[in-house]
Image (cartoon, rainbow, N blue to C red; front, top):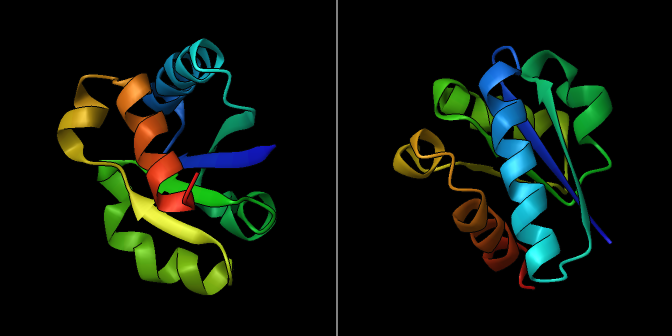
Amino acid sequence: MRKIVLMCAGGMSTSILVKKMQEAAKAINYECTIAAYPTSEAPTEGKNADIILLGPQVRFQVSKIKSQCPGVIVEPIEMRMYGRMDGKGVIEFAKAKLGD
């Protein structure tokens, strides 16, 4: 079971993407938990994740979040995928980065 964490500035639009990702994961029987948090919660909510995906509006914080969550993969979500709320695309991106 993989733990995928999305981080953004406030969490509103990201929560929509989380739902779409959950639907996409279920459709392909990919066992994971997906949750969204503001970047301020990275030290607590991100440290046990397998991967942290950053919304485009906080992509500049990659280095900071990597330092707060050592050993966790931290990647920005491609802006077009995020804008389209492409849950399937983001799940595939996360799986590729995780080597699944």
